[in-house]
Length: 133
Image (cartoon, rainbow, N blue to C red; front, side, top):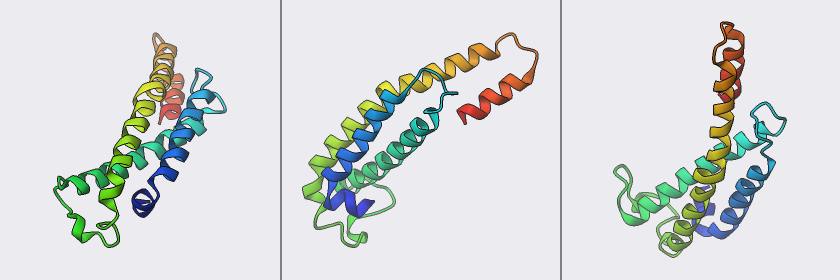
């Protein structure tokens, strides 16, 4: 993934951001829907890609505390050219992750909490906890 982000950042950017936006469109408003597993998968994928982009940006800026760019075979030559695209990618991806996807998952959480309030039966709590994890 690091290699792809450095050498073809636009391809990864277009695919992952498109998936994240499409995941927003799949939201039915409840975690128990058939599309929730797809949405949660896309959120995990996008978060992992964001972590890789963050690593590359830190390497490019020289701010990673554990690794230097010169230690990364095959990245040093191409990374400086990819940095502007990676910065734009991160802004765009985080806008979707921290915007509509976060709002959807927060709404799911609020509904699940509301279903559990005032219940003496822990089975609803157990099922709702399992759904969110």
